[in-house]
Image 1 (cartoon, rainbow, N blue to C red):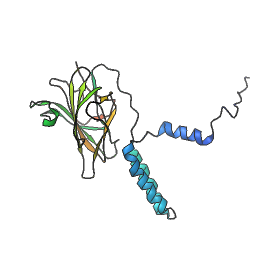
Image 2: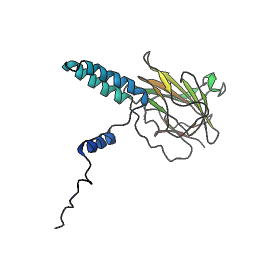
Image 3: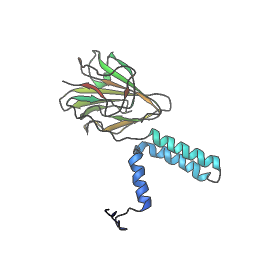
Image 4: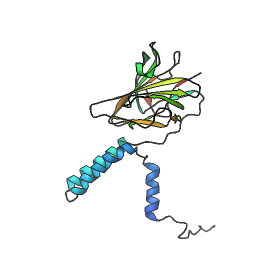
Length: 220
């Protein structure tokens, strides 16, 4: 019977390093905008560490905030012309609507997909196509991306509540890749995607989306 190979100490990772590697493989990374919230929760617990309720509250709050501000790794589809969902959530509308004037997409109704992002979904928003940022609202509420095929895709982000705030990570003139994080809306939001006229939308109302992976449409 073959003998089991003996690993030397140089071949075995230290226990803390091994555990940290396992944690990193399971726990998704967190968007930078969430770090102050998690740090604040932990600081609260640190000052009241002698009290059990304070420790428990701070740890639970920190874990919940880290979960909400998570930025999971996503693998966009290798499908030519694919437009992917900009966020995790539920499709609330598949219709046509006149896009906001600041996007510069004209006054005619365009195909639109609306996605509701709950407080339990990841707060990050992702680029639905690869391309060039042609417009970015100062408050992060709207974005226009010109794809490599010179097709314009409009995005509108609206906070779901008064506590919500949008942080935009890209600027006009910057290139974005398919599925790249471009913004974050705290504590839930609504994301609208405006597509070129005549685009066939592949999703239905009530369907869940995975940001950066679920295909909304295929541009011909």
